[in-house]
Length: 198
Image (cartoon, rainbow, N blue to C red; front, side):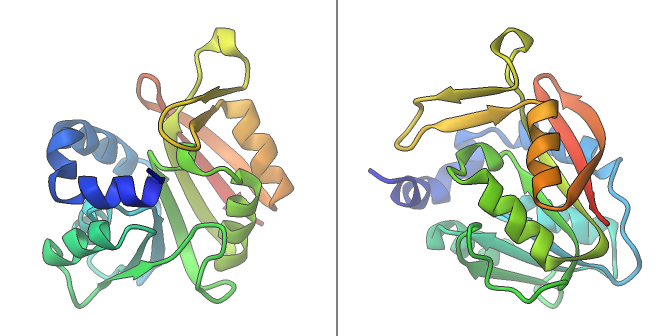
């Protein structure tokens, strides 16, 4: 079974399978570090059921947000739970070929989804393309244990997952025109890396 079908099957019960208390804690700590200009346009990659965009819209009342996911069922759940339908939009697409114009967003987010992407360099190049100059990319994901080096690939689900440490994230970002300006522990082993496009 491919990942798209797997996430389609998970969609209706996703917030129960992956306890909302974990995501709530991660999101709350992430929001402590988010800086946005007024009337920001933001993109959430792998938005799932839309929880992060909802929390961002609660925190920033002038924000316009777009959630992107490859699972139509996840997007259906996000739309049905959307408390800000006038400010949030959900789009089906892939992170390797974002269906957006260059320089369209002030910020982009990836929360516990980057580990699924088999072409991380392509994803970061696309994020860089759609960010305006000065825009930020907030990457939240688990990092590998220190004894594993800067990356760790695991054969979990079809296609597996890869965890990227701080150094590996910084190198990937630099190659895409994004500079890592901070790394912050949110919950062990979940780390936020903030990139900026110069």
